[in-house]
Length: 106
Image 1 (cartoon, rainbow, N blue to C red):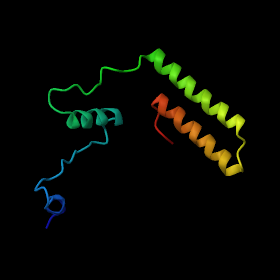
Image 2 (image 1 turned 135 degrees about the horizontal axis):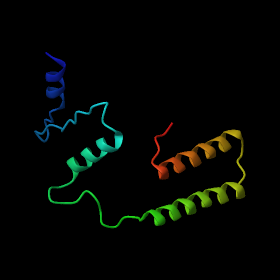
Image 3 (image 1 turned 30 degrees about the vertical axis):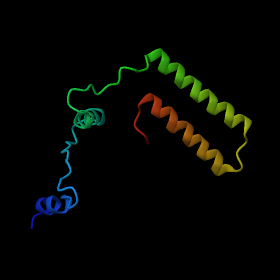
Image 4 (image 1 turned 180 degrees about the vertical axis):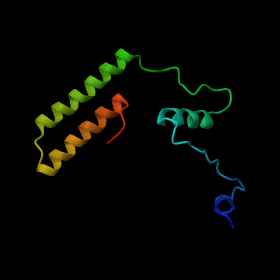
């Protein structure tokens, strides 16, 4: 039995009699392009993949500044218990900051 036929037979649901959809991805495709392909796949036919209620860039920038400022205020007002807690706060700050900037996580 080949690997492909094994995967096909093992992934078939005996309860719903359906098989999952597998998406072949090329290493050359960017993560954003792959996300768009998956988004289109999971969106019902006839619907836009974007909700009309989106942030403008200035609104998004203001939200980013507000969130990061609130984290800074909290951290300055509430001292960490130890070095590990401080390090966790630094990593959380970096993680949230990168999330707003759409940068890959390190």
